[in-house]
Amino acid sequence: MKRGIRIIATGLLLLAFGCKNATPIVKEPWIEKPVSEWPDFALTNEISFKDTTYKNLANSFLIDTGYDTLGISCKHIFMVFQYPVGLKSIDLGKDFNYWKLYPRNDSEKDIVIKRLINTDSLEIIGQFNTLKVRDWILFEIDKKDLDLYPLKIRYTPVKTNEIIYAAGWGTKQEDNSRPALTKLKCYMNLGDYFYTQTLSTDIHPAGRSGSPVIDKNGYLVGIVSGAEGKFGVIGSVNYLKTMMDKYNIEYNPQ
Image (cartoon, rainbow, N blue to C red; front, side, top):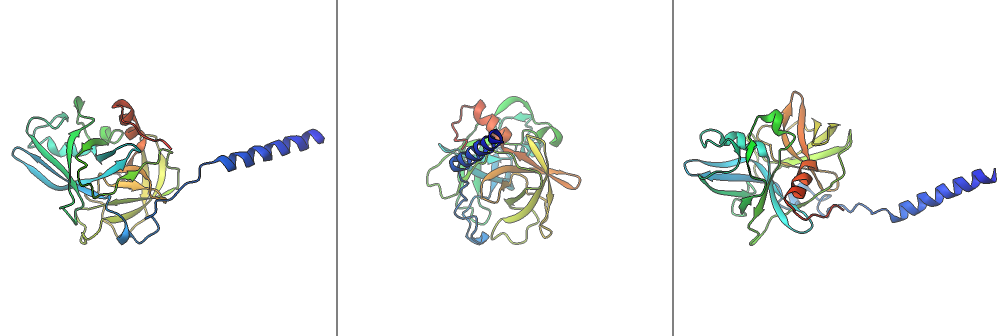
């Protein structure tokens, strides 16, 4: 009996010690404010090649690695560049002019990319079903006069039934004064991407690829990649972490 009491007491001490030393989750200071008061972090793209310029194409955002600020957008945007630009791989090619990131409601707050970090002339663009597991492109940006908010990253996986939010601009969005916020629920997490159910009923999904997906505390957990049937497809931060490791980008996993 005494031995059983000692085991229970030891377990309670370990539990108390673990709880005492657990790192508390600190919410982003803006997350509980009205959406109209959130900082500018949902962006769109303007990409220029020699004979073609794409404006307001998909979505983008900035991330805070803990050491640097990087630009992010969706890799399947390269499917658009196959014609008429003629790109075949994840490489901007010789006819590339510039790529800007900016809020659609304030194009003067633009950030110019300096280079595409995970460029790869051997990585074939492919179709959506191959891109969804690797749907992140990373940019080194010109941080001069940075007036946009970089999102902090959550590295723990999204759980089944967890509520998350996509913030971005859509092609059929009538009000462009602010990016729309779409409420989602995780249906199934497959590691490099996860499926979601859309809980918002008043938002059209078209054109929202590349939007950042945040959790209830305001931390980045994914990127809008596309849809399969009735489910949304979100690229998880797993691939982002893989790319940062591959290209020796310092980050703070806490």
